[in-house]
Image 1 (cartoon, one colour):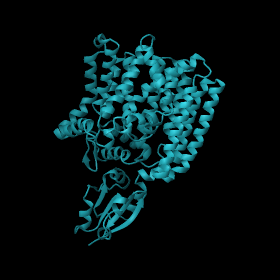
Image 2 (cartoon, helix red, strand yellow):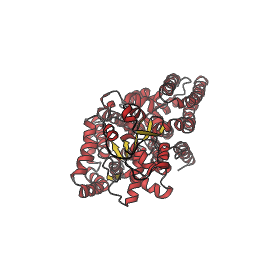
Image 3 (tube, helix red, strand yellow):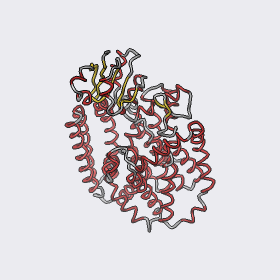
Image 4 (tube, one colour):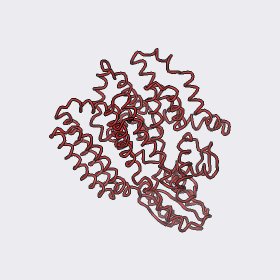
Length: 518
């Protein structure tokens, strides 16, 4: 590799590495998702059982074991800390940015790859999930590796990556890349390629990588594993909504607009230009592939009845590659006002994001207000610099302003915004209050959404508090008991029942109460 290549790699590594590493372990694990992965990895270590995931002492069939394994390994090195829980995700997020850079450089050109890698690392949802103890950055890395290796005709490596994706998230790790490749072959009238992509030996590789764990789980747990993991967590959650958002067909439109911020300002132009170039451009087939890749991910999860913000993260790498290609083409045109429309869109998006933050701060989390003001000042500076580059014709600097602005925003996010919001989404402080006076004997009942974090920070799994169960537990003749529940649930109890409870501590909208001995 020449000097320029090393400089580009170092640039992507520094930007992505700083973003993902900055205060990575500085916040408590946020309920309900992060503590699940940390607690499951902890229980794997305690049981020395690295086949069957478990939580609260029970077997847990929600996800394959890849991320649990990675966190368990990190805990062996860094201890059972927030840093260890998030470290694998952050490393794969950095790896994903480097992967997109390398793919863009090889498949498009040097500058397009560099912009793509930086755009991915600095897009809002990508770095937020990359800094979280969840599976999405890891899945995105393996799925992206599979598809980029396929484009580079390194088929056996692509199949191995698909197998690792299946070990990370389940069948979608193979189904979605397969669907993307198949649609691309149909659209480009290249079905003859099926004879050259080593389908049989490649499928065997996928099975060799992923099947042993599934086979062992079936041997140990039988149809309970099949029905729960494949039946409920994959098929049922696709067909039936787990959350009210599942019925919203447009759910992922605002998620994409905000999640891919600030690079959303190039999306429509990049997609349109890529589709047009698909017929007569030497890179047309690759551009069409990126469009299909992003579209299939978006459509698949839009059709799914269970929707979560994180599900569409695997479409961000192809979007970053399209943005990298389109931006490079704009820079090559040398037109002085080429980024005027993106600057207008950036102004509108910044206004929208800031307005949303102010509304949240005013209506729900007032502690966010100082951070919102700080972020507003930062983005005002970014907008001023962006418009300056437009009017002075410094087109290359426009991209630099976006990268630098989002890197600076990470500092604001991790030092001001998230520390203010964390008490609303973590029970760590309340767990400390509980440990200070718990007798170690009385039963503990915990609302479902608080149970993972409470268990992680206290070591007490307790019992999940079922809907409608509180009244019977309070009115019954049982003795002393503790409850972790929503504050409004406690305050909504009739006076006669509330008088039987002692409020020990509150943390934002959560209450820790104790039922007195009869």
